[in-house]
Amino acid sequence: MNLCAQRVRVAAAGNLRYVMDDIKALYVENHPETKIEVTLGASGALLQQIVNGAQFDFFMAADKIFPDKLKEQGAAVGDVKTYAFGKLALWSNVVDISKGIEAVTDDAVVRIAVAKPEVAPYGERAVQCLKYYGLFDKVKEKIVYADNIAQAAQYASTGNAEIGFLALALVLAPDMKDKGKYLVLDTKSYKPVEQACVLVKTWERNAEASKFMDFVLSDACKSIFEKYGFILPQ
Amino acid sequence: MDAEFLQTVLLTLKLAVSTTLILIIVGLPIAWFLAYSHFKLKPVIEALVSMPLVLPPTVLGYYFLIAYSPRYFFGEWLVRVFNVRLAFTFEGILIASVVFGLPFMIQPLQSGLRSLPESLREASHTLGKSEIVTFFRVLLPNIKPSLITAIALTFAHSIGEFGIVLMVGGNMPGITRVASVAIYDEVQSLNYATANNYALILFATSFVLLTVIYSINKKRNTWTAL
Image 1: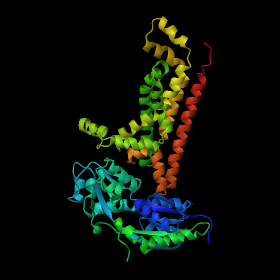
Image 2 (image 1 turned 180 degrees about the vertical axis):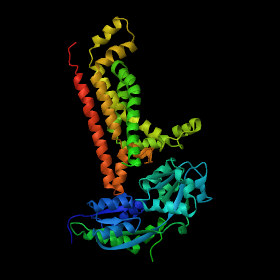
Image 3 (image 1 turned 90 degrees about the horizontal axis):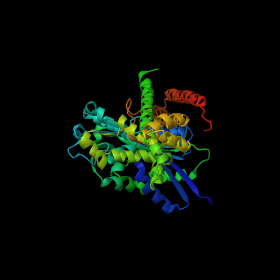
């Protein structure tokens, strides 16, 4: 039995901001001596940091390709596990988006916020979605690429971008929910957002991180993911 | 050297030069005012001018983003009257850059003016010269070192701006993607070679410029007694 406080440093994708608050609270209820430290960022940026030696124990990305890359580089321990499937949503507090994605072609929409596709999976899906509907070329001049999904949400919520392509998980959170309207986009218009996680290879084996990973994948967290619009893997 | 690289470097220089020029025009009157006027609220103005030194750029950037937003008063007024949106434009980051550079221009000028003996100014007045003539013909030439320092600091500071430009500019290639933001971007995309090129150019430009400016300064060393 450990006498010193355990610490798990989690690198989590931006769309998990509110999910992590809930998961953390639930875990700490049963493990009061454990400190869970969450750092949020674009999955691609976090991968880069970990590869360059950033001290994280557990990596929860918004796309399976990032933990897979980590594993390829020999910087991961154990298997990559999918914890949820995310959904892409359109969000606006300025224009009416109920009629659908065509709203992006409106003259009233001067700027569209999309997270940078190279590092943010939801940004990549947003571009795929626009291309699927044949709208990308029409509106690509209007797109402003945010650093990560959180900044895309910021552009949209401050009204500097009339419409934002955001993660459903962010849109359903109390902070965003009452501030604007959202539209869940058809899942066939983009490649599924398979969100996966993996343990990071650290100098010292962090047993608590293993326990936390098991917890995240367990039934106890299923209701939290569902609350934020995720679909759980079968 | 490819086109995009050159474009980014030129954009960075354009922002730095524009910011410095605007600040010279705006900063001289403010510095004169702060140096010579006496009124109760002066400390408040001085504090406001110095705020950009203390506030993290991201805080300022955030407030600018809100200010520019068409959902709120100022941004909405801009859209309504001028049909102008400032977020994600060069003009938007220029304004932010000017505000952020205020203390770098004003403080050296203000302290330069304060260090001049009052007799200089008084002598000019007794010879019948107006405030403006006094300022341009008597005071300003005597604070050349301060002016040069102010220009150098403002320029160098503007070249290095990152936080505020990133927040308000939106990283648009050719428009708001200055070298400091491009470096960050290229590192994130694992293009270390490109990032290194930008970094070297910035370093070399700033270093050469400052060396030249400080050598000019040295020649005009005005430690003469009056």
